[in-house]
Structures are given as C-alpha cells and as structure tokens.
Length: 117
Image 1 (cartoon, rainbow, N blue to C red):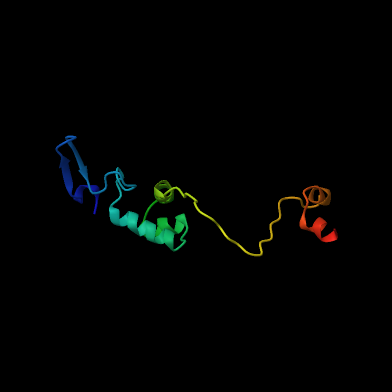
Image 2 (cartoon, rainbow, N blue to C red):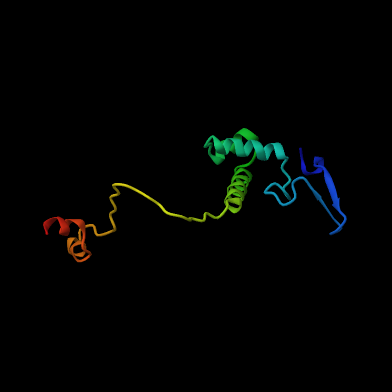
C-alpha cells in the first residue's frame, strides 16, 4: 500500500486534503507502508540495519534512515512520565559515589559510623 493507495479525505473547515498516513511517521515517504511495517517487525526481532536492508531489498542507507525515523517516532510519541504519590521500599542499599573516600562517608554520617557509636 503506497501513499497513493491510501484513502484521501477533504476537510471542509480547513479546506485541506489529507490521507490515512497524515501526521504519522509514515507520511511523506516513497516506500510502501508494507515495507515500513516489515522494517518495524524486523527491528522488533533485533535485526541489524544491514540485515534489514538485505531482507527488504533496500540499500543500507535507506534501511538506516527508515529505522532512525521509526525509533524517533516512538520516542516522540512516548508520553511524559509524571511521578506522584508515596513510595515504600525495604532493605535498600545505596552507594552514593564515595568509592575510595572513606572520610567523606564519615562526614556524611553513614551507617558505618552509627554502628561504631
């Protein structure tokens, strides 16, 4: 299904034409939609760009471009994470970057100092 095979629509309020791929990562590209979906499927299988190019009969630069567009599209559509509420946890061990600097741990009032007291 190429861009020409998509259903076309006309918006009476903004007086513009659009199709099924408008405002998607697939719009404005000359490759058929089935090639994009196959590329996405191969990416999910963790196939390299060179292997994708061979499987889909593309040049390596086209496969690289397609995988980049798909990855960026996923990142752009990812909703922002908003943390809220209380968090409870048990038995957590946290190292805060004092490796080799035991004096810094003593100054911060670490649990080692409390055990000696």
